[in-house]
Length: 111
Image (cartoon, rainbow, N blue to C red; front, side, top):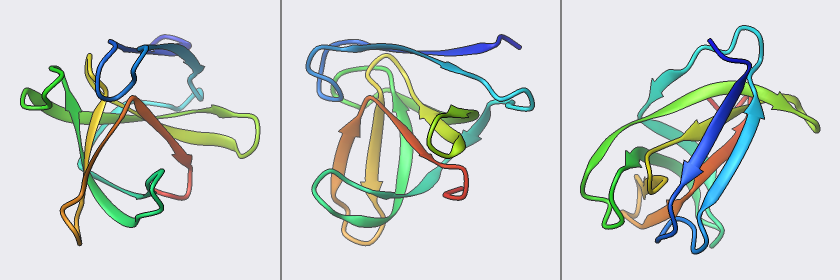
């Protein structure tokens, strides 16, 4: 297990310019598959969202997203939810609204 977790997202719907970031993994931070998350979108829609990793710009080639505990300066630790080459596809469970994100960094209490 490496000390850092890399997030590499190509330019596309999840991030216009693409993303290349590194996060420091918490010592006990094993990656795990994740299917849903409590999240508030940029548009203010709060609730449970189904989440998958997108490997193509259209979001049709998907696989399970992964969550890993990383160091966070404000909370001490947070969950990094990362996906594929084109980030994440999130579907709001109550409304069916779909949003694209490069990655999510959520409170350690959110999962």
